[in-house]
Length: 280
Image (tube, rainbow, N blue to C red; front, side, top):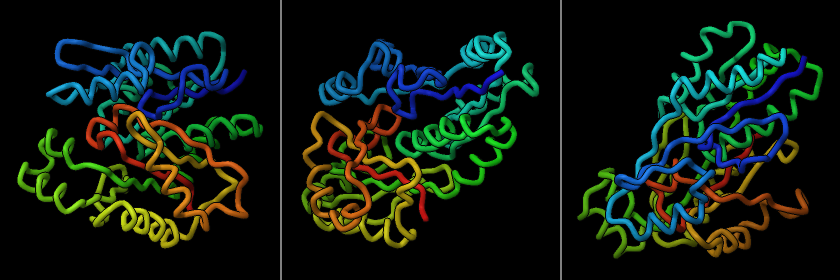
């Protein structure tokens, strides 16, 4: 008997990433058009449509039936499943996973990552490490629920346009913000998205990200960590890496970079950069 991990596509992990991992897609809708996230709609295609569209896309939670089918594919082989979902405060996907798990007591365990995208991904990758350490499913779940509290996710937005489209801010605020080159710095805290501050220009925004990392105690480089970006270019991320070289030099020889998908990209828009890590 072995332990398998199941997660959702809001983790932005590519399909086929690991043989012990199953990724269930959220549904992304552009008006009447529906797509399976990162299956028949890549991150690049998502941003191409986002830029061209006059209305914001929507994402739909994974229904309990889809989880139930995934559970059967694991437990029918005598294996155990640990399910890691995006934050319950951001989607009903966690509840769907729990509803489906009711008939699989002792065989399926559900964990609310209290995060999304990069933050959810590093918890999933940590779980994949743990299943090879001769731990029980219960021990792994307890460890994940402890260590997820150490996860830090911080992002710098390049535009206020998509927060305006989503009704999060007024058109007046968005216009004024763009005129003044205001870059909001956001974080995922206790499962919800919060605004940490507003910087004037990318350079000041980068400084806020650096300050946030230092304030949290620094990055645990022995654990999974990622840098991410939204949109079609990593130009702004590469600038951030250059500006923040003191955080990485002498700590690592390479920086893992990923793209941010629709769960966050819908509201952040293109040009956002993000960092996710376990704090020391």
